[in-house]
Length: 118
Image (tube, helix red, strand yellow):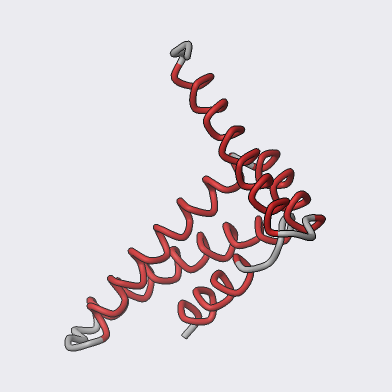
């Protein structure tokens, strides 16, 4: 039950804007821990059937959410700039400019991290 509530909290908080979205990592890690504990308890109790595969799928989903949200935090400044730009964008063309600037920032970061000169 705790696992399901924590997964739901992770999904809901990940839909919020930054900086609140960063709390999704905490919920996702807590869900991952509870999922593993629940799986161990179910396995030891000899519970078979639909519960074990559901817990395994939930643990995988929680792991993916943790990695995705952690990646978002790694790109915090770029994400904040994009969020601010999109919030202030009034037209479709200005939203396209925000997306273009975001993609340019991501490409620049990728180039710096790979060490390859364009």
